[in-house]
Image (tube, rainbow, N blue to C red):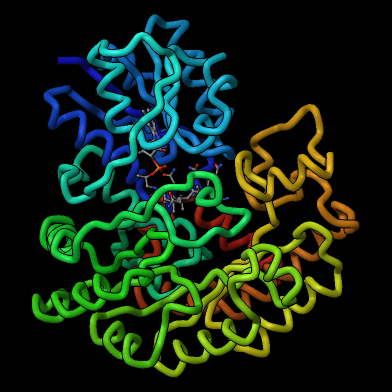
Length: 452
Ligand code: B12
């Protein structure tokens, strides 16, 4: 039996809106194989160094997306200096294993369950271990949320009233869930464009079991499905909704999907099963840019139709957009703004187009020779231009980003200072507790007020 600590790396508290589900899955898998596993959560504010020293594990497994990989490397370097063996895993090192190996004893590429066990049980001599994709997700053991501070994550919306979770007010106990691996589509900016993995799902029955446990054991009032496209397999989602209604679950929920997946009948059923928000990857208001980003798969007309269908079903109709895509002009970016206003979106987010390593977009940039020699991964946070993809200057881009933020403040329910104030007046005790527990939420609100 090995002792293992899994680390969620990153110091940006704004990332703390959703729990590290990938580490919970890995922890459940390793525990079932007889290993002793703990999670140290830097994003939730834990002193991970103290925890690692105290638990004195045989291995420290560290996760990181590109945006937080510097922190992951720092942790791994520290561990090795202090005599702990480290394993790095996650999307970033899957694409950049050699870079990861400069900081760790082992690197896991791809899905980590089996590879992790091979390493901690000493069954491999390789330092870069490629994981096999799990074929039957229901065979994975159930996750144990007691390994993390579930209450901290339930307050994610309180700390960040401006998240994409528009369907609930602050003060709602909100958790996240994920029941799909992969996505049938091939958007050029997404990790699915290089993973090339078959889409796999947990069964509707398993989904209901997890939601029931959240409701009864953790008092969860709302969940967001982190699945890339929850609605992409119609029979499963129909079965899920029917079971949800039969079991009389109370949780309200939101999800992400693709515009071609919804129709009136399905939306009626989703509404009955407490669906309150659907967010589509709408990406752009210009057909030229949309076609480039989504490989010609969707049209502006389809986007408009889906947004309206969801609104008509009395479900919040939201969208995520990308600005500053390769060759995009300011005029094209303004078409995105126009789309948001004309179609009266109930909430939206607009991030700066970021070419993550490995994606088709990254390859495009490589061909165009726009990737600089020296890259700082921390800039890959979707907030700023990582390197010039358009003729628009960094300074102008910041101005445009601000314009979109102001628009979001006006449109996103629950995000405007007015609605935060309204909720605080309605629940004064809760508001005071929230500020005492999360003084940083005041900064977020003040930032919003001054931006108006
Ligand atoms: C949930 C989620 C979030 C949550 C929580 C993220 C977290 N790290 O805990 C929130 C909303 C906070 C978030 C934020 C961000 N996210 Co996010 N997110 C996701 C999402 C939808 C699901 C992640 C997940 O649980 N997947 C399921 C698990 C099973 O897969 P997995 O994460 O790949 O983990 C497996 C392997 O990678 C490996 N593994 C992972 N870690 C480790 C560690 C060890 C030791 C081992 C052995 C193996 C291993 O084993 C796991 C099990 O098989 C993915 C898309 C997706 N569907 O995967 C994007 C995704 C991970 N996010 C992405 C991005 C860009 C971000 C942000 C930068 C965006 C932003 N500015 O807000 C931030 C970064 C925050 C952070 N902490 O890193 C990108 C990452 C691209 C990249 N190259 O890094 C993804 C891939 C989506 C995309 N656009 O392609 N995200």
